Image (cartoon, rainbow, N blue to C red; front, side, top):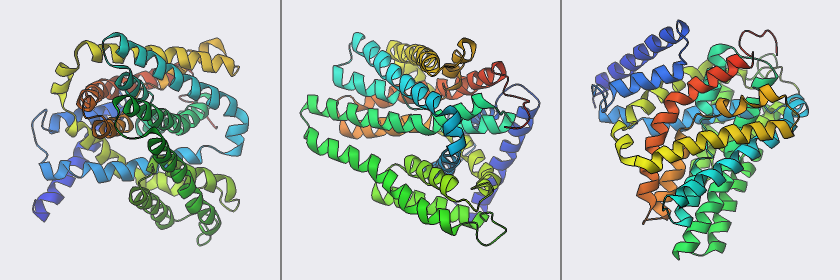
Length: 392
């Protein structure tokens, strides 16, 4: 693709994003859903206006955008937030992950999927879409205890999900006779604890060194340098950039006492990346996969919704949240996107016999959850009274 065409494509994407953003401010629709729909219309499933070379930017943009989101979500795990909402964050996140894993796995098994792949499908169902949730909160200006808890849950539940997925994949591969469970368990531990270790290795010096140049606030260059450093080292070392970014953000926000607001500069620069990320995510969605997922796909969607509702309610009640508020956590955590697809891609490589089925199921259901998930989150935020609240 010629350089001039690249600039014209970028201009068209930004203008389309601005149009979706403008429409989102004048309707009740989340701009995430609007951006995805515009991306679908511009992609191969629609008018095919985006060149294949531009769609290929999606992988790099997704890493950059999601690492920024991970930083911000980690930055929401302050001592104050954890002291006030840590019990709810822990119980709700674990409850949702366990119910998603159990119900979806059981449903897939009852529909004829072998135990190993069924467990992997259940583990994929634990993943959420942190970017969509974070952007919706930002778009609506939602504040309050409910929002603080949601941010904390979104920050940590993908970590639980990755642990569940790694263990499920070990079990499935063991049943298939490929590889040894000891080696697979060691690899899973290396990826998870390696990401946390990398986050600590970057976050601890970052907490001391950033924000020293300009009035106690980190500069955009500092923030971007740490984002790219975390993403690059995570990919190079083969560990989760989401978990590493979340760890860096949490370490800096809690240990950089000279910062007034750690990493607020990322908020100023993340939207152009997020806009392109959501548009290209829509452009890469293959609507025809919806025709391939059939009964198993319908069961997956229904069971994941039910698991979120039950898990969110039970976890919130155990944590002492009110009955009405407890009902809202499940809908608020319905979005599912890139993390689930990433899990499915790993399953495709590890389980040759059933990986393609898992990938098709995940991509097809993601189309649904990327569209209805943000609407459910918006409904939950409104019902919780978190929109229009002043202060935090």
